[in-house]
Image 1 (tube, helix red, strand yellow):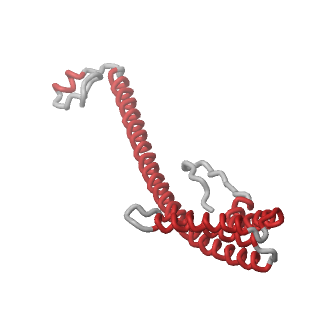
Image 2 (cartoon, rainbow, N blue to C red; image 1 turned 180 degrees about the vertical axis):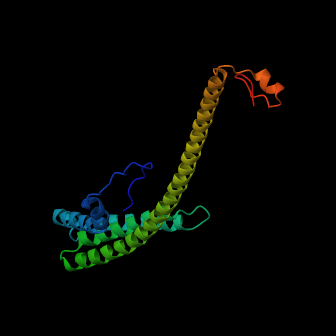
Image 3 (cartoon, helix red, strand yellow; image 1 turned 120 degrees about the horizontal axis):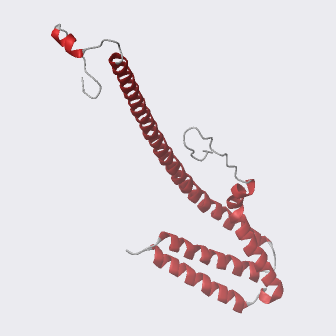
Length: 209
């Protein structure tokens, strides 16, 4: 797992996810199908067993959800997510209707197994897509961080060079001023005499070289 980004010189904090956060999505399909099975058997024990009316209601709802899913899956305005929800609702209602209507457990358990397997097949496909998107995002984030670090390093080097150049210029100016002051304080120093003797005139304080 990649650690969060931290500026250069600062250690990045380590983040650990709880194991339940990783296990919960993997258990969601079996929990969903098991919940439907349990509720259907509770309904079976409370009057739905061999009830034509209850079975007909669930059949109509399942057919309506399947029809809505087929409509949402086709056409120019088709929505894959909405269509998947419609077909999932249709399958869930059909499963619940059969599990609630029958008096024995083998058929509901068989349907529960099939529904669980299909749920995991669809979930694995979604997990792969999500993982691929996550890896792509992490790589793009790492590239941006490396670019930012490079820019920060270049700017730090440039700033240090400017500071060192300014310090060097200040030290040179200080040494030059001290030399001019010491020369002017020499006993018998006469710039006119130096010029008359044919020597170049040295700059005095306040004049440029």
